[in-house]
Length: 246
Length: 246
Figure 1 (cartoon, rainbow over the protein chains, first blue to last red):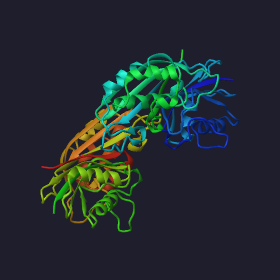
Figure 2: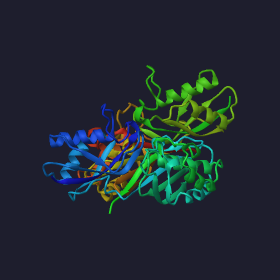
Figure 3: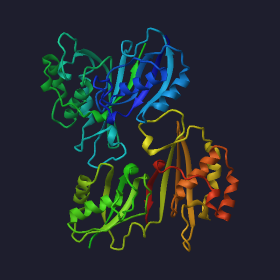
Figure 4: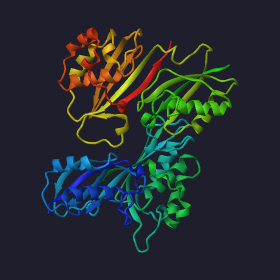
């Protein structure tokens, strides 16, 4: 069976997240499975590089799936875009090696968190950003960010800790940019726990508002208590930007 | 009575255009009048620099209104943004001379028309652009655009010609840019007839697709027949960018 790798983007605003739900709720995976199964005229399984939560967006989500019959990638791309809703788009499709699996083969990811840091509204970008009107000190945020680099136990930075599952992850880079009234936080790592980016950004935001010192972060790693880390930032500001493979 | 001048932006997607309707339809002017009248505790009249059609957006619409009581501009701005829906925003408010009127004093305007010129989707910007998948020749568009510069009778370039009303207008500048898969058309003039920008852009698009020659445009001015000019481009791609005053 030919295996395909596809790059997709979505506006997550109106979805219950990436992952299909048993009760048939509105999910991005559910929409893609339904279009592919219709095209293939039989059930198709689709793997994503990882889940995104309800309301989170993606510019570069990667998916994999196998079809019984060969499809020309360009024709498959056009057919998928014809049937998908306009808030989910397929940017490219290629044939992949048989053993390719979007989640198991992923080696790292970059997420972008966007904050509109102004007391004035931004009606055009509002769906992709969280708004914080109090001025953020991006130098303090960058200083705090430096404590996250490297390999740490992120138990304090995830929503629900599953017993016996490792909460150790490696952050390769955190970049903080300001462009006018917008603050962008780019986080690259080998993998992310549930809500990890949103809690990490929440902790940086608290540093940027002067409510927390970067030097407290090693203690958060050591103690692993969720309540001591920052708030979980709203989903709307988060975008899965890129997924890396070998 | 103090007179105020405000700069507003809106996502026009879900509105029946700028202008209030007698039957109470959903309009941008209607929303603003309702918020101002609530704040002032009496009916307030609001003038816009001009109407925008259903589905057209604005980054720099200018409005004027008089209030019986003095309001601090910053407090008025914060109060308006608190009560307006999130797809309408007030960017600035200042006190203006008594004789200031957003429409009567306007000396010119710039509109932006955005086209997504790709066969691939763009889920994030889709609401602000029209999509044309066939490649546009922007050099041919710029050549055709040069015929519009200056003062002409735009009778062939407006939706409904009102008898005895002049259809002569002056275009100061048309700039056509390509950035990746996006084509942007900036049109600056002293004033615009109903649908004029959308028909002008439709005519440029036909030139960009090789279906029309720029040198036919003087004949369109001379004959003034709407059916001979280009199509009316969809409203979603159009944004009122800036309004000029003396």
